[in-house]
Length: 564
Image 1 (cartoon, rainbow, N blue to C red):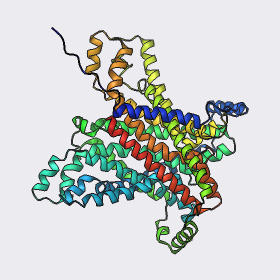
Image 2 (image 1 turned 180 degrees about the vertical axis):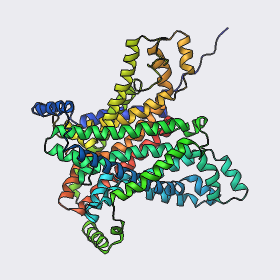
Image 3 (image 1 turned 90 degrees about the vertical axis):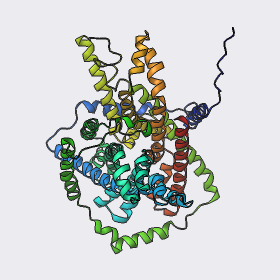
């Protein structure tokens, strides 16, 4: 009796082609960075790096400096709160209008409905493609050093980003209840309010908290261009080489990020929304539940927001009347006359192509470093593996092993917190002590910063993993490394790749900010053009940057769809 042999799966699939393409892109990026062909290490900067690290053990806690730190921390928090409130408001409106399901409800069976949907999606793509730091430089030239600059620089690009994510959440939310109301003659907006929005509420809330954490980091970055807050004080201390003060400011920024992280995690876990960001929403409907307005956590949150939001807007003291003042329109007109028509010479084309590829290579190296590091950190940073009662803990743990497990968890999470709390331009300036200028310092800086973000997101994926298949593997006698290799990684690897690809889009935008401090790519060229007020050339450089961002966005979305 012959047994039928199972057909061998094809070697060339969409998934293997994408993975092979990414490996090739990483190899070309390493060549572009000069890893194999030139001297990279600068031993002359070691004394400065040593002094910088030693200062972390004795930060400046003098009575004269601590009030400055407190005031700067509050300014950073206020900018983040104000920017997040405006961006979420814009995001809710833009998210509904940019969702395909909205136009299907408003214009059912109309062939031109996709034109409206595509037009709004395209309009939202431009503001999110330009980094908030560039928006900050633009608003400073128009509004001066007004607090309104920091708020708008966060709200405008983040509003477009929130609208994009909110629209994807709405499109991936089950629409059967919505269709039932629409077929009963209920107006589309009313049907949305009673069906789709309540179902998607926890996902929308989780992403709002995630965007608030991002706003704190962006508020710190905006301080580099003079918007105030912790970023401004950090830049001043770094310029004057006052490393003790610098570490005090770092610790304040780490404490602020950590506090927001813990509070948002507690609220999300109470409400049953364990992940900040989930790209497989249709597969995770099981943990959703309706939220009651009488829930004590909701009441406390609403009361806290009702106090915090007006207080932040009042303390910032932004003068919104500047937006429609005659001086603003005059400056906008003058800047437009200087910028248009853009100047472009064929001789500059080759330089732009080289810098564009260097920018892409920097983003690829950064996300590769962040991706590998975050996967490794995601296991010790998850509560469900090594702690007592975890998957890889062996029964009752002795006191020393129990303490070691907790220290590993706390140390991993603190490392990830430090990585993401310190802005990427600061990491780049520190790395430039010991590595010669080029795209490699920028890639390492972006990699370290995004390692902290991705590592925390992936740790949550590990914590939310269904452990029943893993327990079954252990019952069959599989060791912990085999359970990790054949159980955890195959289940979570697709989500890990989705997060990595999502952050690659963000890395592409962030290359400009490390370029502003001398890390190479289009950001360095943009710095030179802005410093010389060559706005016509700035338009050309920004256009190249926007096109690159769109290309990376398309590649990332296509790869995520293929890898699902």
